[in-house]
Image 1: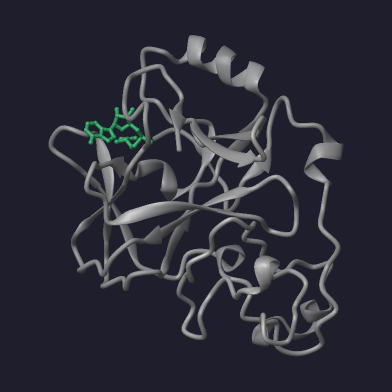
Image 2: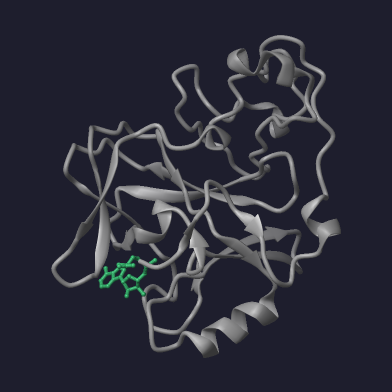
Length: 225
Ligand SMILES: C[S@@+](CC[C@H](N)C(=O)[O-])C[C@H]1O[C@@H](n2cnc3c(N)ncnc32)[C@H](O)[C@@H]1O
């Protein structure tokens, strides 16, 4: 449990300033950001979130939230395209499980599609991930690998490691029948963040978990989504 608490992911070793600062142009909406009003952050011409702040289905295009480069920054309170960046709104409780170490449970009901928390950590270059795998191989595996395919041969991998710097997201355990899912969300920059959203309605007291992906929970290996 010895880690520095951060609110959102930060660049770590292996991520250059140029990579981190590769940002999208902001939208020029002056009021409501919606697909109907042709907000340029809403790629694929569909909204990211519903009026009641639930994740909407988005396939084949990037999910980009509005940022401080957007004109709507002046009207942030009315911009519907900001959810992950506003942080955790649900009551989440860390607890000791019987066999999985710590876990997180819902402190209140969470509806399907609602935002739970970011999986915040250091964004690392691949060499640093390999170095840390060696260094920490005896202990819990935390690095989450986000994989995105652009075209046939182009795969973008993003590594998020909350071992040294992270948030409550680092305590969610794996399940093959999860009640949460990880969604790739971009906060105005090309380097993505990992948002954990409810996959179905969750009752207060239920443990929150997501599917770690193909390499699941093998010790010392990175996890892939
Ligand atoms: C991201 S951490 C999750 C939080 C962790 N339980 C803790 O106490 O810090 C991942 C580690 O939790 C443990 N873990 C996660 N899901 C598990 C499961 N379904 N069964 C057993 N251990 C699990 C494994 O040790 C895994 O490497």
